[in-house]
Structures are given as C-alpha cells and as structure tokens.
Image (cartoon, each protein chain N blue to C red):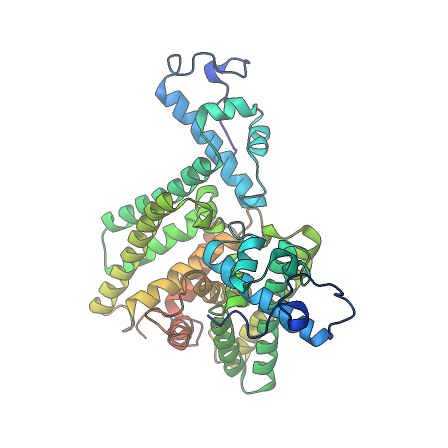
Length: 218
Length: 218
C-alpha cells in the first residue's frame, strides 16, 4: 500500500483545523492534492474494513486531521467512495489506452491489457473498485460507473474477437471469454494482500499464464 | 431464482401474526422449513439490493408477514446473512464431496467440482456468498466462514496438484491455478442474472472450457 499522504491536509498548511476562508485562499492544485490524500486514505480503510464499517472519523483519524477539515475536501462518504472507484476505473482506462497505443497483434494488446488490469486491482483504488460493490452508490452515479465498466469489458471482448480473427486465439464466444478473463483478474483484488507470499508481478504473471494457456497439459 | 417460499410463514399456519406459544406448539421441522423460507427471501433481496440496503421490513414484506413474525425465526439481520452464507458454503462442500465420491481421474473430479461451483454461484445462497463480502459479519463468525472457504480452496489445490501428477494438467503452482479457477467461477456470481442471455449450464460450460483449455489457439 502507498503512504496515505505526502501533503499536509490542513487548509493553508497551518495548524488551524478549521478553514476560515476556504474558497479564496487556496490554489486549486493544492486543494486537489489534498483531496487526493483523503481518497487514498479512504480507499485503504474501505479495503481493510469494508465501506460500511469505515466512518468519516476513521478517515480523519488516519490522516491526523479533524472531521471538519475533511468536509473541506469532500461532501460525504458516498462522494469519497465515488471518487475512489472513479480513480480505479480511470487507471484501467488509461492502462488499456496505453496498451493499445503500444500496438502489436491483438494477442500482444490483450496480454498488455490483462497485465495492466491485474496490476491495478492490487493497488488501493483498483482494489476498492473490486471490493466495494456498487450497490453502495446511488442509482444516478451507479449508471455512470456501469457505463465505464461496460467500456472496459467491451475492450476486452473486442481484443478477444480480434485475436480469434488473427488466429492467435482459439475460436470462442468473446463475451464469455472476456468474462472469464475479467473475473479471474478482478478476483485478485478480493484476496491479494500486500507484503504476502507473492509480489503483484508474480500474481499477474501466473494468472496470465493460466488464463492464456489453460490448466490442461498441451 | 427459486420461489421464495413454499410454506406459510405464520406460526401454526393461522392468520395470527404473533406467535403466542412459540416454543411448545411447533414441531421443529416446521419451524426449520419456515426459517429456510426467511433465509431464501433474504438471500434474494441481498443479491438484488445489497446487504445494507435490505431491511428486516423488506424481508418481512417480501414474505407477506410482519416483522414480529420474522423475529420468531431469526434474531437479527446478521444471523440471516450468516445463515445464507453457511448454506451457500454447505452446498459447495456437499457438491465437492459428491464429485469426489463419483471417482475418476483427478481431472474428472476437478471438472466436476468446477461444474458444481459454477452452478451454485448462480443460485440464491451461492450468489449471496459471493456478493456480500464477509466484512459484514462479526469477527468470530467470520473466522468460521473463512475456515470453510479455505477448505474448499484447499480441495481445488489438491485436485490441481494431483492432476499435474497424473499428467492431465500442465505443471503449475497449484495455489495460483486454484485462485484463477476459483476467481473466474466466483465472478459468475457477481454478474449472472437469471433469465438473461445464457442459462446457468451454458455459463458453466463456457467458463470451464476457457479455464481448462485457455484462450490461446492450440
């Protein structure tokens, strides 16, 4: 897990806990960096204890600030969760885009996307995306998240279909194959523990090998 | 989804909502059948809306009884969840035991266990086991559930290792291969919707094929 924050969370970098002139005295970039620190600490706590068992007080305590200070950066717990999940999804989208830009065969691109996906679900925001079901998020925001998830799933399907066409992958139902790939990789986020027996790279490598080649002896 | 209940939930099968002599006037089997109906309705609601968004009032409403009647069969919401998850796990254990008793090669047994697992996570209790994280369950009960999950995981590892030994499976790290198999199959419980494009049998068949043979063209 990353260190929760590198910037001081206190508005104005003073020791005062209460922001006196919140809107005028802060540069937006500073405010955003501090908001990021809030999301990062929250993602860690959600992953450790579950979303419902984590309070705003817990998040404030982990950051060493008061709850009023927290409210300067975020409106409520759902907004925090939404921020965490959005970041997890954005990391995926960026990684997939980079894998595609790198070019190569459909199999090369699929392998690169799988690697990116496996890596991200072992990190705070990606893990949060997997561990906290989106039933916790209100219907309007849930629709946005599901659209992004569908886009990621669609990209995996497209690459599988293209792989079948180029002859590198066995003929299959690309939708189901993408579910199996996405499911097995997502599940990493449910069981992975940093500092355990396997490094994220080892996990990714082994999972990819199993998914690509299967378990049967060839 | 199964129909939530086949027995009337009212104690004594009367229209009275309040059990007047709860302990003495009921045969244990009747009471157990009715408790089952409560768990089954609850599992469906947890799967549809999430655990936290489901209230005891919702469960009572789905069964067409009052909340006091519900309290005759269960103590609280956590006891209900625990009951659902225990049943999901018991279905798995029974299925694995049956697959082993049927005999055959390690690959035969592994395939049968995978089929059982895929089937159960599309059913109410199995789906509940997958969708509701065990952070919702208090620490002492969580330990019990994790022991059972570890036993299931261990059985998959054992069969993979035996398959490698008998030469049907490719050399691999059985622990990681079992995680990939268990992860992909568990994920079915997260996305599967009854009455959708695929039947549970089709899902199981396609997932097994992908996991066994991999996506690469042989």
